[in-house]
Length: 273
Image 1 (cartoon, one colour):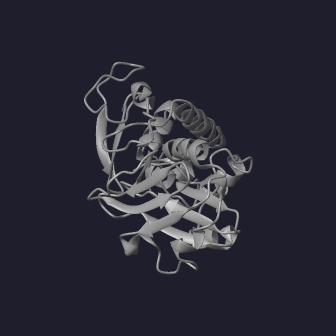
Image 2 (cartoon, rainbow, N blue to C red; image 1 turned 120 degrees about the vertical axis):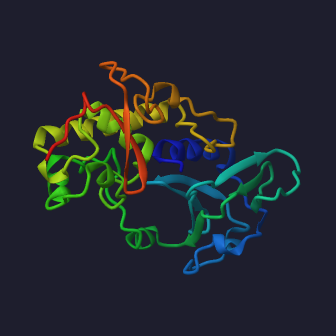
């Protein structure tokens, strides 16, 4: 699943290609992609101009000249393909948007992604219960102390909880915990102020570096916009089970937490109980 850096990369490339362009036509071929409670149909965007490009957690938000917002969550396999000339619809193309200079195909092999057209972003995202952005100044030790209070589930699972910090997924959670020298099974309520400060710092370091390098290309993820993720060359633990730790040389282990594979170094990362 694309995580925050991948979504940020897609947002930036789409902005470069679509800013100030008018939506001449839009066709949705797989109706369930549009959320059932979407206040407006996608066709409401026809005739409007792309004015703004935002990211909220793992959501893409496109603002239009008619006051509406197109919100897209890519989920597992959502991808944008851009063309400067006519392109036939493929098997997995579920939406085609046309502007004067660009043809946009939206593909999703698993059909898990979701969209909505709204006129009030705050109200829409209130229903999604998203936590703070990783670079929000409000993300501090006190915030995490309150969020982790009485939480006994593994810290790896807590980092994946979008209602606390939004945008972190499996890849970056492993990397953050490795750099923080915290075992993924650690009890979050037992982490001290120093641990929490380090988690915040490493969250911002890892995500900033990934954004700068265009995100991470793992398995099926690609921006499909001529942008290739390069952060995979810098991964310390994710996808490196049974390989030597980059710090101590100890063989990396793995385990399942909330249904996701976690790779870690049992020598470098200590359990906080």
